[in-house]
Each structure stands twice: as structure tokens, then as C-alpha cells.
Image 1 (cartoon, rainbow, N blue to C red):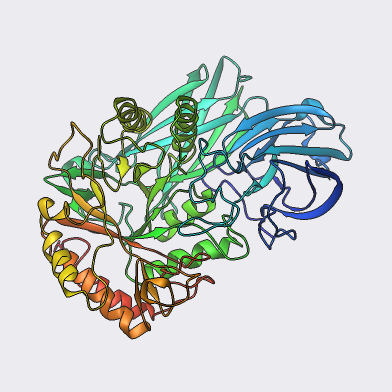
Image 2: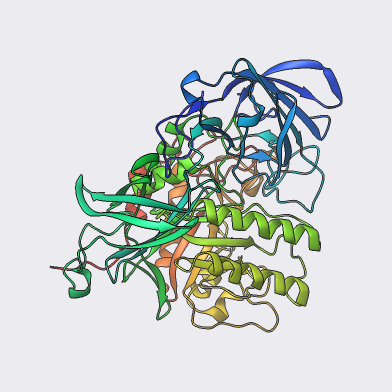
Length: 590
């Protein structure tokens, strides 16, 4: 059962998990009531149902009780994610509706409670065949094939309740500035907050307090600039120290914030942030003011038996630890907004994340507007995670098939880029990853043309091609840039490469039901191909990072470094030895 705290970057002590066994019905068969384990989708085995759906309408119901000690508080009902549209009913009253399958939402259900056995009903609509809503890697066809996977409909992240005072903190955002040694704290309070209040903020590092203040405020919004380095950053005293967050040193500052009304504490939350900077300079990507070579894994975020929902919190931890054990320092989340619990562990363990939204497939103005709105919600929710260094907006022109020369689709791509910067100026942004680039901080290119075993001509073309943008044009499937756009000196990364199946897959004449871009007969053969591929990339002075496809096998796609059970196919230290041949950053003596 998934019963860990579901929002670990904004913690209150009182809460109650509503995961577990619910009642489930399909709209086409309202009399068939089945038990389902939440937060696992009905298409997954773990849910207890494990079958394809016959209708677009899903109905969930359960009873729950609110602790008596919560009386006098406002009771918030939270959903981590529900795919795609849902309406929530409490004791027959409509608590609210939400659209968007990958973003979190909440409703105040206080006025609908009986303070006994409460009845909760969630009606979900998931338009499985609609190509205009964000669905990412979920297949819209009856049988998943090629790079598409089994659909995930309905509730797929945690459901929970918590009590809050009418006067409470709604959210806090932390924007670090390592050059000044400060963090900007912006916040918003609830509608019911009194005109005047005090906000007490304590920040600690390694269990030692580095900042404390009580700020008098008025109105719902406020801003605090906290000097957490005590002014020493400007004099260089903290340069190259463990106070910065990085994959090698995931240092976190812990925050306790208390809202005081007439000297009485009405809300207390715990949070954290990392003093981390990501920027582009001289054709390189810099982390904390030093050139940093990113070695990423493409991570689809799927598991056998549970699909888009991790079986447990430990599975997130294991995936990150196994990736790091193989010498990778981050992942490019592919076509998925990941669970905040994963992001929390990426923060704690030190693992870079490129966050992405699931794409829609056919372009419409209404679909573009929905996609844009949901991206804004994602950025707002995940703003505080230091692990996230890139907002990865579109992938390979999915949903914008005429991006190369269609002005409407180009404006949409560019709008996503500028929207991201309007919401968050402290991360890098890629409008379209793979090819047909418009606005982009990184020249992010995809190629699987590394050459099959024995194809010496293609291997040579790849080896030479990765050394120049002109050579890249022969390796990338479509034009590098959309019409009217060109290279502007951005860092060049190969953000999808590899995809090598091992022991099976039609790429090397094996099982037709499994698949990879090229194949290797056994682990030893795979290591030789992988070593050649990474060696070619490391020999390029142009390329400053890569993303290998992919972390784990998923259904018919058998090109993972881990199998479908997320177990190693090749010993971790063998892969790490190859990856470690190029240092991540320069070594400095202090």
C-alpha cells in the first residue's frame, strides 16, 4: 500500500491517507461493483482489476471518517493525480471538478461533512481515444505497440485529507541565489487570513540554525529575502563548499514556517530547498558556476503490474540508487509528470531531473490551451525541488506535427518557452526536444543512428557526425531547427541515444513482440556496443552531455539497462566504468 506522506516538500503534522480499498464501477456497467486498490489504475494488476476498460466513465466510492480532534478546522481533500477529468462528491454534494491527468488538486470539503461516516464519490472521464488531450506514452489504440504502453485511467496518485485553520499558508516558493548567498521566499496565505499577521521563519543547515526572522505582514502575499550564507558568498568564502546542492553533494536547507495571528500559531509547515544554480555560458551547461557534464537516463516512469504508479516509495529510491550506481547523474523524465515523492528522493539522494509533460498527439487550439494551463500547474507545484534543472516542454514535435513551417504551431512552442520563464526564471527551458528547435536554452537532439553491430559504415558516420552540427544533420531524423530558427551557440546535448535491446527484440532478429532500436545478443555484446557509443560521444568536443534510452524495459520495449522488474541486466560497475571515463566537472584544489 502507498501510505507515505504524499507532499514531502510542504509538510503538516496532521493528515490522513485515503489510499487502500475503494469500490469501483465502469459507467457502462453500473451494477458491477468491484474492489480496487487506490492509487493503482484499473488497467494494472496491482489494482485488483487488471483489465482494459470498456467505457470512458469510471466511478469510485468509499466511506471515511474525519478525526473528532479536527473539528473547528477546515478539511482539505487532496488528489495527487486523476486521469483525465473528474468530479468529486462528498455526502451527495459536489465538492468540485478538475481537468488534467497529471497535476495535483484539492477541495475544501468542510461544509459537506456529517462528522460521522462520510461518503466519497469520484466520477472520472478519460477519453482514451482522444488525440487532443495530454496522454504521453499511453496508447490510444486497442493494443499497445511500438513505443506506446498500456493506458492508465483514473486515480493514479495518492488521495488524502488534512485539517487547516481558516488562516493558513497556501504555498511557499524558494528561489536560491548562490552568488549572493540568499534565498527569496515568496508565499501566499488563505482567503480567510486576517489583515495583519506575523510569519516566523527558521532555516537550518546540518541541524544548525542559519536564519531566523519574524516578519509582520499584510494581505495574502509576501516576500522575504533570507541571507543563509551570512553575507560570506559575496566574498567567496563559500565557493566550492558543501553548502551547494549537486548530485555529488545533495545539501538541503530545512525550513519551518509558522503563521501567527495575535501571537497564536494558526499553521505550521516544514519545507526545504537547495542552494543550486543552473545556467548556460560559452556553449556549456554550468551547475553552481562550474561546467557540468550531464549523464542522464531516459526514464518513462512505468512499472510492471502497476503502470504509471510506483509500487512503493522504495521503488523510487531503488531506481535513483541504481541509476547512480551505473554512473548516471540524472534522468530525463519522458512524457510524464512524476510523483512528488520521486522528486523528494531525487532532492535527497542527489539526482538531476528534466521534468516533462505528457504530449497530446493532434494539434487544436483548445488542446494547446489545456496543455499550457496544465504546464503552469506543474511548474507551480514542483517549483521548490532543486533536482529539477530543465523544463522539457515538447518532445519530437509530438502534438505539433507541422512545427517546421507552421506559424501557429511555432508560436505555441515559443509561448511554452516564454511561459516557463515567466513562472520560473531560475531553470533552463527546452521548447521542443529532439529536432525542429525553436526557442531553446539547449540544442537538444535525438539520434539512434549509432550503427548496428557489423554496420561499420553507419558506425563511422555516427563517430564523425557527433563532432559537428553539420554532421548531426545526417544523424537526426528531421531538420535540426524549425524554419526561421538556427543555432545560437547553445550547449549541444544528445538527449536520446542508444535504445539497445539485449538478447531479444526484432532489432537483431529475435522475438517480434519485443523491440529496440538496435540489438545485442548477450550482456558482453551489449557492453561492447555501449562502450563504442559512449566513447564516440566523449570524443566529441561539441557534445556536453547525453541521455541514454532507457532506464528499464517496459512491455514490448526491451531496450532498458534494467529489466521489466527493474533489475540489472549488466553489472552496475561495468556500466559505471564506461560512464566515468569523462569527469562530470573539473577538479579544484582549495
